[in-house]
Length: 71
Image (cartoon, rainbow, N blue to C red; front, side, top):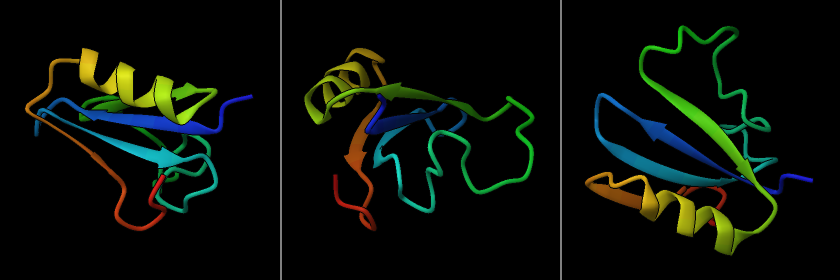
């Protein structure tokens, strides 16, 4: 079961780690009704550690935890 998600934003070249139940994450669906797939992607992981390792491996300029759900 995926408990943590990483949102990789291609345009801003950054990653954000969220808890699955975070309202900004919505279990990897985000806040929009539909996703164009032009700005980024959601990837789910079964632990906090795996999510942070994956985000760091994405080679983005910035990786942070969501300031709202604080994973």
